[in-house]
Image (cartoon, rainbow, N blue to C red):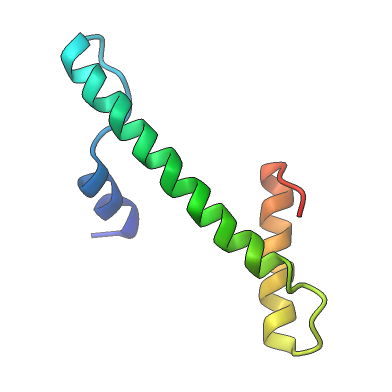
Length: 76
C-alpha cells in the first residue's frame, strides 16, 4: 500500500457523488485533506528556506523543495 492509499483510507474520499449525506461527509474529509496539505507545504517551505546552505545535502534538498514550490506556483 502506498502512502497516498493510506492517507485516503485514513481521511476518506473527497470527491462529491451527488448524494447530500455522503457529500457532507466527503466535504468534511476535504477540509481534513486541505489542512494536511497546508501542514505538508509548510514543512516543504522550511526545507526550501535552506536552499543557500553551504552543506551540500542541505542545500540540495532546499533547492529541490524550492523548485517544487515554484512548480506549484508557491514562491518561497
